[in-house]
Image (cartoon, rainbow, N blue to C red; front, side):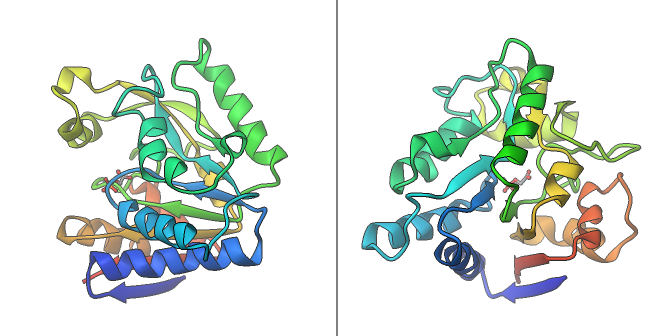
Length: 235
Ligand code: PGA
């Protein structure tokens, strides 16, 4: 594991954007695994600026996102498809055929999980996967549990996660109960992983995840086993 400590959120975002930029430059047709949430917003902003200036080309890049709420359409402002449209897709020259997110409206979510897992495989696997971390140690929607779920799967959100994510919804009742999420096998199969964590609120769980025991009760702790893990955090 390599750990980079930065002064603040902006510097963390700059460093994260540098890593993504170098992968995009060296492998201009690779697959990036992408995350939603507050954490990567600054990184997306910087990537969009570089693309606009002509310094970074996403023309042949493919992206696969970690997760999506079950029941929310791409037009719903809290769907992850909407988030990605707003923060990245509409701002860079990614081709719409090349961006992938689980379909939250799929009639058969279990089947959608299979399709998504096969899609990642058929694209050739993820070159660099960007991750945030939840306050409870979740990565994507892999919540603390007795075992590590393996592949893309339907997950019941914990009340803690629903409450934390509820800050974006008008009321807690509107927060979906289920999501489709990449599993640990899908995540750990990425050739490189970059975990981002910002702020005091993430300090304890980040420490436990990277230095504590490896346990499904702290899902991010499994990342310690990844041969190519980069953690970028701020002071
Ligand atoms: P955040 O979410 O980036 O909004 O803190 C991270 C997560 O819950 O995985």
